[in-house]
Amino acid sequence: MLFNSNLRLWKTHPAAWAAWRSLLLRLNPPAAGLCPGLGSRDMSDGLSSVSEERPLHTPVMLKEVLHYLEIQPAQVVLDMTFGGGGHTKAILNTFPEVTVLALDRDPTAISLAQQLAKEHSGRVKPLLGRFSELDALLCNMNVKPGSVDAVLLDAGCSSMQMDQAERGFSLSKDGPLDMRMDGDRYPDMPCAADVVNTLDQQALASILTAYGEERHARKIASAIVEARRVNPITRTQQLASVVAGAFPAAIMYARKDRLQRPAHVATKTFQALRIFVNDELNELHAGLCAARSALKPGGRLCVITFHSLEDRLVKRFLRGHDLSNLDQYHFSQNKQGSRKDKLLDKNRECNKSAHWFPVQRKVVTPEKDAVRENPRGRSAKLRIAVRQ
Ligand SMILES: C[S@@+](CC[C@H](N)C(=O)[O-])C[C@H]1O[C@@H](n2cnc3c(N)ncnc32)[C@H](O)[C@@H]1O
Image 1: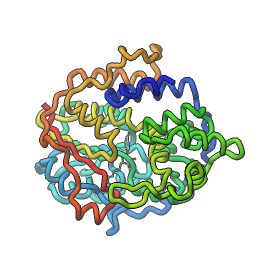
Image 2 (image 1 turned 180 degrees about the vertical axis):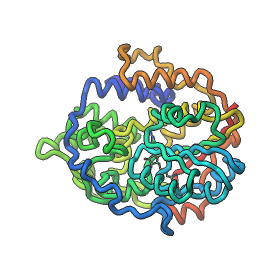
Image 3 (image 1 turned 180 degrees about the horizontal axis):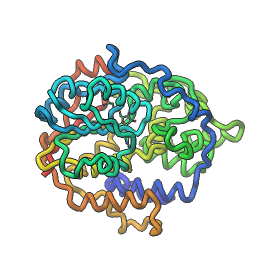
Image 4 (image 1 turned 30 degrees about the vertical axis):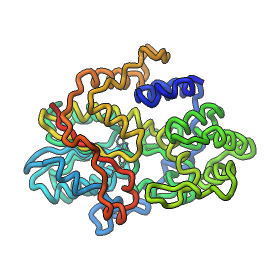
């Protein structure tokens, strides 16, 4: 398989992810249709107001973000990952007259941003869309390239998404195997159940290796293919048991997370599927490019990542590596120009001229007390750079 023979290339050239993913989807198109009832989901279900006492998502490294963004009164800040609004709220409350452009691909998050916009009239501008759509959204809002003072990108999923069983992100809560961050906007986009039930065994194993760094990918892929012969895998707990069934019972919780707590043996499988379904790495690269074009010279970028695939990509991007030069790797690109190919072209263009001053040579990690209070931030890494 293309991926397996290019494992080293994969580790060192993150742009290979994008080409491999689109090639795999072209060879193995998952049939959409196994995720029920998205349109009828109540977007406010289980969610309370963004301004209530108990936050929907505890912002990670808040103190550090407020410090490193160096925001001045009346500046324009772009929060590329509004989520539960934790960082945005703190920015609004700390820095007078600042305006926050609040992007998120998840309509549930944007409905919270709209609520916050009503409470802080004129100071919050909600933007519904993906990183890869940001340039166009800013243009529609008459925000000129090179005019934003500071940008925050807090990658991955929010607690709101993880905690709602019906979103299908959580290993510990039973729900439909969905995992789409914006399935409401793109109902034809394949969900995790579509991927698990329609891709062939080799393709599934490649996804688990690539996006989950799962050592037992082949064993898990084989268990999935066996199980779906009997019944389609449509629920999160069903998938968790199928994965667990591939291992002896004693090792179900034998893996440890960074806090040395027992981690379920399917954790990496869930991570891999979520990244694949939402095309997260390609989107992250597009987001970094969009941040660069939005920022004014001297403007600051803070990026928080939660696993090594993301952090590696951010580190290389900020060092000005070309993450998009795929021509030498013989991936067959569709010259007709699908949406993904256009995104690759755009990312390639962006990287040619990426120049940043690092603010900290070393990555910043959360303090021990903060991790104790909010264990979800345990693997967070913050990188800060100034746009030249
Ligand atoms: C970790 S949460 C952000 C939490 C937020 N900083 C807070 O304090 O509440 C990440 C958010 O980014 C959004 N997101 C992830 N990928 C995205 C993309 N490609 N485009 C736009 N939003 C994205 C997710 O929907 C999620 O709401």
